[in-house]
Image (cartoon, rainbow, N blue to C red; front, side, top):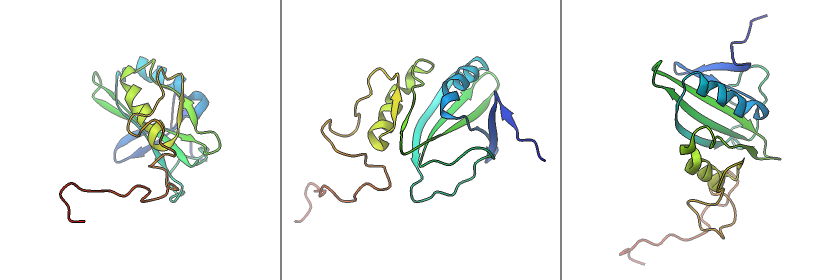
Length: 159
């Protein structure tokens, strides 16, 4: 039996030469705190992915694929290292803890993931829409979102 590589108890995989950590939702914030203590002081990106139409993807043994995935990219300037964190988020309960208390710069990134995918970030200080109007229904980057709901008009175009 091959031993699975892990970091702070979470399975690790590799993608294009970069280490990827796969914590469960319940261990997400605890892992992020440990990574911050390890020197990953910069969060360069936080986004989400909807795998509704592409359910097959590489995940380490023991990590169950869900419809949504939150992806966080971290950098340790001191050790000149990048690290990606991928957390599976189920369609039936699209919520995850906020990383705002650790990296305040994630405030807008989490709002965008909420606005576009409908993933709620528990503990976020202002989880409101950031790109779409407040009264907008639905989440435009979900794979089951209807295409072409509002006609686009270009200024100066022949009609």
